Amino acid sequence: MGGAVDLNTHPGHLARRLQQAHSLLWGAMVSEETTSPQFAVINALVEKPDIDQRTLSEQVHLDRSTIADLVARLARRGLLERVRDPLDGRRNVLRLTEEGVRTHRKLVTRTARMNRVFLAPLDEAERETLLRLIARVADASEELRA
Amino acid sequence: MGGAVDLNTHPGHLARRLQQAHSLLWGAMVSEETTSPQFAVINALVEKPDIDQRTLSEQVHLDRSTIADLVARLARRGLLERVRDPLDGRRNVLRLTEEGVRTHRKLVTRTARMNRVFLAPLDEAERETLLRLIARVADASEELRA
DNA sequence: TCATGATGCTCAGTGTGCTGATTAATGTGG
DNA sequence: CCACATTAATCAGCACACTGAGCATCATGA
Image 1 (cartoon, rainbow over the protein chains, first blue to last red):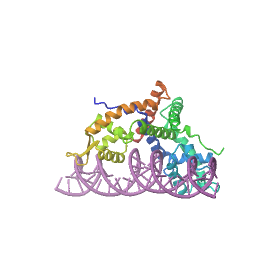
Image 2 (image 1 turned 30 degrees about the vertical axis):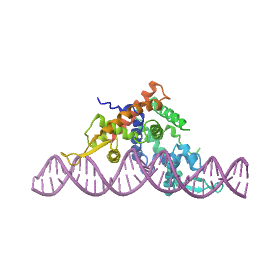
Image 3 (image 1 turned 180 degrees about the vertical axis):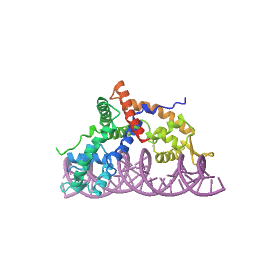
């Protein structure tokens, strides 16, 4: 006996496994260079260009420090431009380059295909349930932190 | 328009958010020193002592490289012992110390409490559904890898 | 105007997680 | 017995993600 716990009843452990399985499949089916969080950032900038890092970090639910690194990498690869706001010297205004927009277009179709493969073990109703339940738990936790 | 995607339909993005929310709550309600993956390792050693790192990595679904770092940190903190197997000089045999067992006992009750808070937005049926669906997707992906 | 506070960013430090290369030890076939 | 493959662990390198500290800039009130 000894009181060991079944980790399959621990959502944190399962979430980590899920994320890891995802990033593996991502590398194989979507891109080796552009990671999933990077795609989230690019996607957010397609929807709302010319925002600063703080706003961006709220959009994609990433830390301010994490965003800084991530944006620096994307800028180094020429996918976006980081310009000091002349009206407010504290802000970096972010905008995708042509190359960034092209990358986004390419990855959108691939992510759709990957998501189908990833969720293939579930039927349509289960897929929606899974996404909805995760979102509810995540939303509630993030609510508490605000 | 411009083709931006709704990230709430992307399981990878949701998985990352879920995991992040979890690790935040973990730090607040369970332990600041011992992380969730570290607990998974300790828990596995409670169930099966005297295994090597490779076996351990399969038990908790963590990479061999990652296990090495993680185990080194736990050993440095005196929660487990890493001994070269005299019968097979390649292996490190792992065993919890008294302190490690004590830590596990303490954290088991706290993790149970934390999981209840974390999943509070869901009713009992939804909780089981969530855990089961995540496990199915993760299992299927890991299957492909093998 | 000028002190105070708030805001946006950066930096250092730590931990998690992967890949790929290397090293050491064991096992096996000729 | 020895060359060869296999296996376990380590190491280097990269990316993600957090905290906490510090810095520059802007906004506000006295």
